[in-house]
Amino acid sequence: MILEHLTDIVGTKNIITNKDDMAPFLEDWRGNYKGDATAILLPTNTQMVSSILKFADEHDLYIVPQGGNTGLVGGGIPDASGRMFVLSLSRMNAIRDISADNRSIVVESGCILQNIHEAAEAHDLYFPLNLAAKGSCSIGGNLSTNAGGINVLRYGNTRDLCLGIEVVLMGGKVMNLLTSLRKDNTGYDLKHLFIGAEGTLGIITAASLKLFPKPKARATAMAAIPDPQTGVALLSALKNATGDLVEAFELMPGDILKVIGKQFPNYPCPLQPVPEMALLFEIGSSDSDLATESEDGTVPIIEKLNAFLADEFETGRIIDAVVAQNETQRQAMWNIREHAPESTKRESWPVNTDISVAVSDIGRFYADASRRVKEIDPTVRICGYGHLGDGNIHFNVIEREGGDEGWAQKRGAIFDAIYEALYECNGSISAEHGIGAMKAEQLKLVKDPVALEAMHMVKTAFDPKGLLNPGKVLIS
Ligand SMILES: Cc1cc2nc3c(=O)[nH]c(=O)nc-3n(C[C@H](O)[C@H](O)[C@H](O)COP(=O)(O)OP(=O)(O)OC[C@H]3O[C@@H](n4cnc5c(N)ncnc54)[C@H](O)[C@@H]3O)c2cc1C
Image (cartoon, rainbow, N blue to C red; front, side):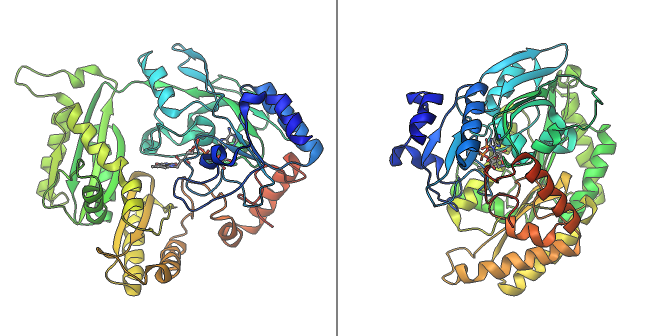
């Protein structure tokens, strides 16, 4: 009767109950979480989502929202009981409206991030949220995890890019917060409760997003540096030298560059020999004059970057550097960065983290965590790459080249060592991936108890029976 009614709501084409066809929805990208479900529901409009949540509330059905299923903390995967229903937003993927004058776009939540990029570009505009999963992740998932990526230091995270949302509450009510207003101080800004809530408070069905002028000029470099703290000093120097044109600023240690080159030979490190520590950074501007080649063949924005590098060779803060001379070389550099997660997955069963500290503490954290980890095993490879410009490092560790039979036993101690270094710096256990199932236990230990209590109060207010994404973020 339950399945019949749900089929009536979404239509026979939009429900999956066959085990084989359900499989892709029941395992996460890293292969860490494998669940089961009664059915996968694939609504095609907001009214269907509303009817599902009304019915779920009446019959105490557990609902697990899912977008592109690229999440890295098991947030979109049901448990193994087989009693839950996955609600996939993937068929709600229309672009509803785009306004060049308001610099905004309204999309359905299953819209793939890459498609939003392309829709904006067709209007000579730019949506700056950018992550390696952009071809598969959905904007609903991005909002629900408050995703970060490589351009946060200039444009902010997904929360900062959102003007409004449409959200369906448990019980079926549709809350219309889908404004494209730039200013709106009419009481509590409720959209922020759902952004980063990982599907535990409501189902986001549509969003209005900010667009920006498209960068017309870009210069990108990879540079060898002595250590991560020097990277912090260079970030400030680059911001000052370019008038705040820094779009992205990533840390790329030698160990990760070698693993990427090994697993993906088409993406070799342009710096040879591969340095111990490197940066990948980009400056950008919407001023097309900066991209216009002069009579002597130079491009102003590349000259700006060259001048900065020349100064920093003098100071010794940069040891070696390569500047992309054209779009192909630029893409090649970013391809290296984008293949970092996949390369460690192929190479090993990595210890993955997603930590953040104050940008000024990056060097201290990196050195302390490395020391503690090497005390457990001096042969491990430390692949602590990521968004140095935001203080967010994926401090990932893999076993020595050639494998280590005792690796599975060491992983727990290595996690502990990294988090001890993190707590010393008052950092966060989740900078951009969220809590999901993976960090729900840890959250209980590290979150301020009053804040945790307030989070439970909010959860109870929106989902008193705990039917939305149970076992994620908040557990008792
Ligand atoms: C190779 C790779 C690189 C990545 N790089 C980054 C990176 O640089 N920065 C970063 O932040 N993340 C990164 N991620 C993680 C991931 O891509 C993001 O978390 C992304 O935002 C998830 O989007 P999704 O559509 O795949 O969401 P899903 O994985 O489907 O879901 C994520 C969470 O959101 C909930 N959810 C999904 N849609 C909705 C909705 N419409 N309403 C309510 N809840 C919903 C789910 O229940 C789940 O809790 C990366 C992942 C991969 C595989």
